[in-house]
Amino acid sequence: HVATTEETTDERKHRLVEDSVRYVWRHGVSTDSTRRAQGPIAVRASGVQVEDIDGNVYLDALAGGSAAATLGHGREDVADRVASQIRTMQWVSLRTFINEPSIELAKRIAEVAPGDLTTSFFVCDGSEAVESATQLVKSYHRQRGNPGKTKFLYRKTGYHGTTLVGASASSSSEFRTWFAPLAPGFVELDACYTYRRPSGMTEEEYGEACAQAIEDEILRQGPETVAGILAEAIPAALVLTPPPNYLRRLREICDKYDILWIDDEVFIGVGRTGTYFGSEHYGVVPDVITVSKGITGGYVPLGAAIASQRVMDVLIADGGTGQAKVSGHTYSAHPVACAAGLAVLDAIRDEKLVDNVRDQGEWLLAQLRAWGRTNPHVGDVRGKGFLIGIELVRDKETREPFPAEWGVGGKVSKAGMRNLFMCRATGDVVTLFPALVATHDDVRAMFDGVTKAIEEALGELPE
Ligand code: PMP
Image (cartoon, rainbow, N blue to C red; front, side, top):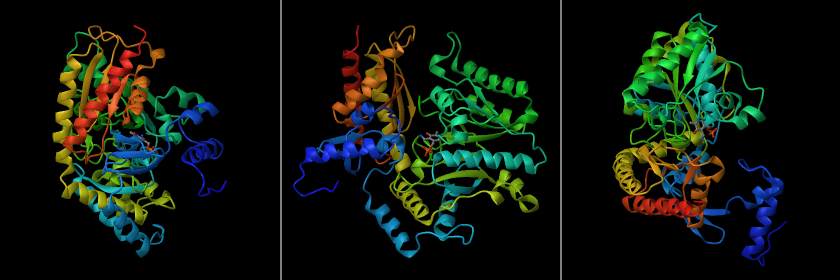
């Protein structure tokens, strides 16, 4: 099809939807009818607003939909930096040359990363960052003379990507069905889900019990077989802020058995939680942090596994015979992506965006908590910075969930879209994760948007 100037908006829309069904394999939708029904056609975006083909303007409380657009949309400073890098030198292979933007970006990441996390292995997205991190960890153990340490622990409800390793470390039953057989050596642990802890237990006791369950599993598997644990400091999908002692105990257990902690911060890293990295809230330093999304604000794809100096010292000892020597992608440390990363880190620093997230996030969380107390179906409001979850329940007293088949969370995000407001739900946990640049007026509007969407969806329920 060739668009002609006479084409009306409706004709163009129809053509795009039909072509999209035929030619684009979109994710998250399977049948012809869901592919046709899913989502408006976005045509432009600016700040915290996305405009569709009909001229509807949506308030974006999801940083583009999957948390990547952390600087908001349409930034000239990033566009200029990216364009300038393309004109100067778009790409040369890291196998042949080192390039300046990647060195500068890695150095800047080391400055803002906690502890001795110093060295970035650059890839293209979050799944690759996770996969690379597991390779790095296996290489670490091999280099130390422990090649039997190859297993990884991961937690229920977690998500670590769609490549074979990411899928094998994600508890999605759909992945486990459709992508079987998954990679061997991935062992599932329970989530640390504070709101759903056994009654009568304090948060502290629950944190201790969850950590103890990790140690018990390590002993069951045999510590000589366990390489690492993949665990987000704050699991983003359900916004599972952990009890304060949990990650500290996890750190101790990892040290006790020489197991490396990969803190997957693809979602929460680079400012989202009101600190550069989520683990900083708990005073613990991981061995490897994975990032993507926010590192380039969604302008150009980039991911990284950031390793500690302690791990790197092992990896490069005796010439480093491990993963760093054998692995790498054509687009590793892509200069254009790294230039975008530098523009993003400059903006975060110069505009004090981490402070903005902390202040505005605290305000939004407090407002939502106060409103939630008056709503009989708001069971829990939790989060840090610009990562906020609202758990809806049938019965607030007993914390009984709604029947899954009611799809309450899904109704909320649909009601939001009807009202030109973007929010997400995982199960019945409604989530907000706006751009770090959201102003006080923006978060005020987001409060209105999400409470209206929830109230509307609750009004549609059978009882
Ligand atoms: N890990 C986490 C925690 C994520 O949230 C995601 C993406 N939502 C991934 C890994 C995978 O990243 P990508 O989609 O870029 O492959």
